[in-house]
Length: 229
Image 1 (cartoon, rainbow, N blue to C red):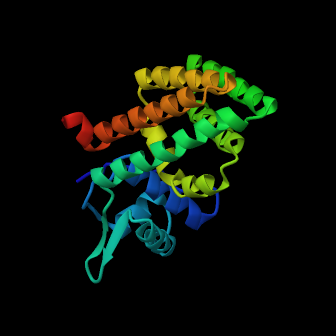
Image 2: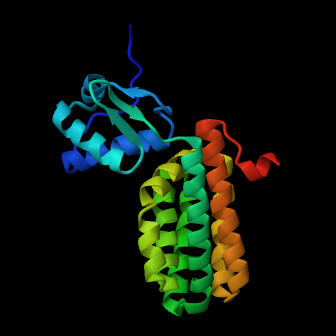
C-alpha cells in the first residue's frame, strides 16, 4: 500500500527545532487531524531522521497542548477546532489593542516602515510570491507590535506565534484570501498613520477574526459560535 507523504525530509537548521517546527505546522494546518495517532516510525522515515529527535519534538508539542502521549499507546493529535477558536479570539484581543496603541504612539519612522511593508506586500501579491507575502505579513504585524510599546502584550502575543505562522500559511494559500488580507493590511496602516485609534483597533480585530474563521473552516469545516447564531 502506498503512503501519502505529508512531510518533507529534513535538510537544514537545528534538527530538533526543525522537526518540531515541521510537525507543529503540519498539525495546525490540518495535515494531521484531531485524535489521529502519530506513527513515529513512519514520520521518522518521511522526515529522513531517527526517532530520537522526533520523540523530543513530540514532547515539546505536548507541552504546547498540540499532542498527548499515552503510555504504551503512542502520541495523538489534540489540536482541535475549539482550541483554534480560542487562539483566534486571544490573538484578536491582543492585536487589536496593540494596533490602537500603535496609532497613538507610533513614530514617523515606524509609520514609514509600515508603508514600505505595504508596498512590498503589493509587489509580492502581484508576483505572486506567497512565501515572501507571508514573511512581509509577519514583518508588518511585528512593526505594529513595536510601535505600540506594549511590552506585556507583546510577550503574550509571542506565545501565539507558532499558531499565527502556520495559520497564515493555510489561509494565504487561497488567492482570494491573499487579496482580502492585503486590502485589510493597507486599511490598518492608513488608520494608524492617521492616528485614528478606534478605527485601527476595529480594523485589526476584524482582520484577525476573518483570517481565523477562514482557518477554522479550511482545517476543521467549523463555523465559530457567533457565526452560527
